[in-house]
Amino acid sequence: MKKYMIILPISATTLFVGLPTGASAQIAIAEVIRTGVKRVIKAVDLRVQRLQNETIWLQNAQKTLENQLSKLKLGEIADWTEKQKELYSKYYQELWEIKSAITYYRRMKELTTKQIELVDEYKWAWNLFKKDKHFTIEELDFMEKVYKGILEESLKNADELLLVVGSFKTQMSDAARLEMINNAADRIDGNVTDLKKFNHENIQLSIQRAQSIDEAVTLKEIYGIEN
Image (cartoon, rainbow, N blue to C red; front, side):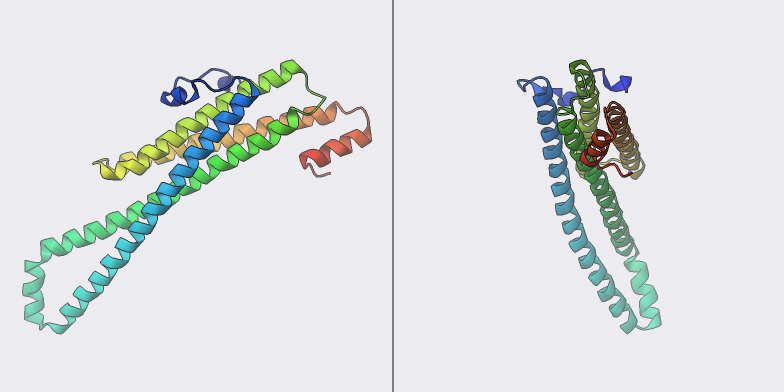
């Protein structure tokens, strides 16, 4: 977890100017991340809805074109197809791009949902650890630093997903867009895995420090540990 103890230089750090320090700052960071993630999800939902509507329109247009073709004579079909080749090709390209965009947005929504999972996992564990008498002030201070590093990494990922949402207004290639999404996905998975592992280690440490079997059982119930 040492990698999370370094304050990462990210553009979003300006959001934290004036925020309280210590444990309350971690909650503030978590709320900033949650707000940012919700903004991404809302943007994704709106775009998916619009893109789906456009897809339906284009599919209906396709059916209309096909119906018109079926009414033409064979010679007329060949002539019409040649004349409209460029327009028809452009239509299929547009349809493909819309379906591709919907796939991207759905993928990003999955990732932002993971971001929310990370924040919820952090809040749940941190609120319990702060009340756990088995941890020293120094240990809680260390936990706080680790959490801060993970949360700031998560905020970077949210920023990158927002860039992808806005990338459909630019000339970014599908390959570049997909690379951004995959890189963010790998980091998000890593953040969630690291956080859960860190929480699990702290929970096991608390249980090991229990002074009786009954106390250990109680701790397992508090932390939701089975058997």
